[in-house]
Image (tube, rainbow over all chains, first blue to last red; front, side):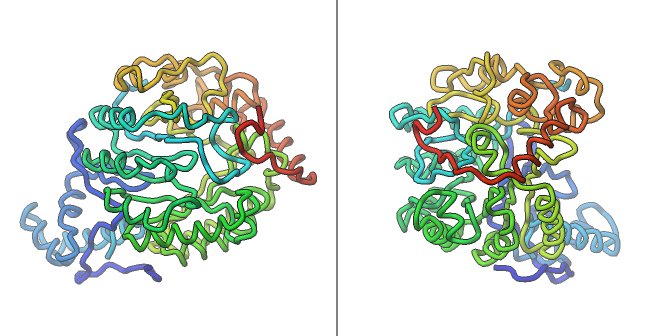
Length: 96
Length: 364
């Protein structure tokens, strides 16, 4: 049991919780994030982050990879990713 | 109206059999016996068709789905196709190792209902001695098997004061999610409404509590709130809109837009054991009947919210306004809204009659 709200930082190692699953939907040709009562349809930037949330990479690692992939300065990327994983963790669809 | 897309979710009611007798059960008054239930291979075929059709989530419900000995096989078929499986159980009838077997079969999530946060409340509402203890065992077996758990708490007059205790229970069980679901008054719940309806002040206090607790437990426990229709300002988008992206199948295979749709006269339901699911989704007259917005009358027809709540619930319109195509009387714009609120407040302030417990032959 998680007793307190997790706070995102560059050293957090986010992962999908057991009740959330990323699924390639062939009928719609899109990625769906499946959870008990909800289905989310992440856009491309969200997917770039979510597919790297494997519990091993840190937020800093993810930021570095995405900065390279999207050719953006890491100083811009990292705060965005921290905000993203905090928001998704608060909604219980990511675990930090 | 936007074009019809593939459905996302399907509720499979595997059986009406259940050891519990909750007076607000969402099953119809006319309960089906075991001999009417679809066979394993019929469900397997339906699940294959569902996956081809684009369904991403299947809720396995009942009755008590754990009474079906083929449950692991059904779950495994869903897992093979990547469908998210959610078991909706009362948690009062499984064998000790049942959860581990279902986890092994590929189950994604378990929802366990608790009729009360306290044992005496659960046992009274379920009309089953020892039910609460069994539910605790089931929920713990699920988390031990690595399965994520939602606690479902149907709320009414008898347990509306237990919401704080429900939250404590969900945390204690290690649940990720709690559904505080005000009872919706169709079928059995409609029959028992005078015994179940809470007062407006209690409802407002509960809603405040839920709001505060949600904030306090952000990132720890997700609390979903199903609002009480009778004291609402706007109706809920029932099922997200009639046959818009989800539907349900009864134990005998009838495809319906929602649990209670059989209460609307004149609808003919197709059977998924005899007609292809894709055809039913597109052409079933019952699914077409109130799909989209074309069927609407005033005040829905020109309302800004028509694609937000889709006119609310057809079954509630039927039972309160006397017409399925009317605006859901939960809406403050309905001419029947005042009467509905009055019904609720009058019943809530009167003494509770005895429950008519859910069992075959009790209501028909």
